Length: 282
Image (cartoon, rainbow, N blue to C red; front, side, top):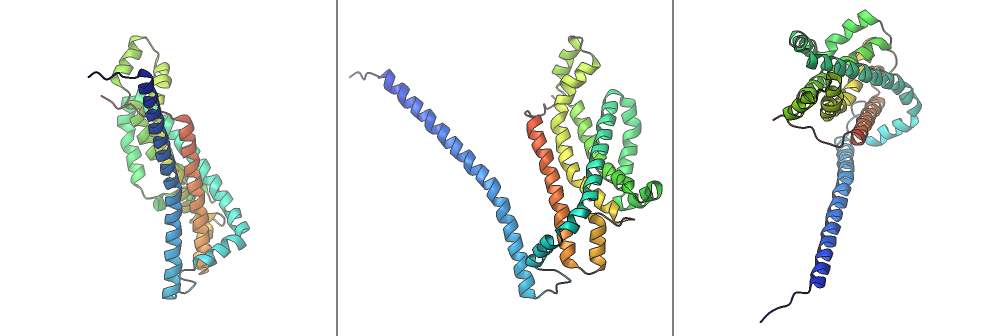
């Protein structure tokens, strides 16, 4: 017995199956996005709940560890003071971020084109990076004074090394076949840099920039611990000496929130700029 196939019915069933698969894929994506948004909020809420429970059950003195309610009240009641001190820290962190990363990109470009320079000075950069930040800070304060300059310098130094390493790696890890093709086509060194090396290095660069966005804030705060009367770092020291734990916790939260906001800003810029993955060297 012969069974006749209905081409029209087969096409209809196939289209319906494709639509169903697409709907299922979109539903999975929507659930994944929802999880990415809900789970961090649930984690933070759980942490706050455990914190409040421990303070209440153990009857921890306020000057040792305040309750979340007291910290929240401090955030609201002394919001003006917190924002006034956040401003110089933000200026120092952003300035150091821009200065340190600009220097790292420039030096990475020199290292890629001048191997002798990389061999001579990269060990020096590594040596400087091994010096603890708390040891660099007093030296920079002595050299640059008590203004914003040493804080910006500390933030820049912290940002510099990760960006330099990632940028050098990104510029050097171009596909050898692509590089050879550019040379065969008589591309200039500038064309190779901007059309091949730089696009390949951007994912590496943004990975470093996201790290630097957080560490720049840390650098600015550490710099304010030495010879500063304003800023998040100075406010942390003052709150600690005054046993004002609620203000101390509120200050830490504000500094952390700014660091997270800075990180998310760089992440957003990365999504707008980088729409490809780095090419692995063969």
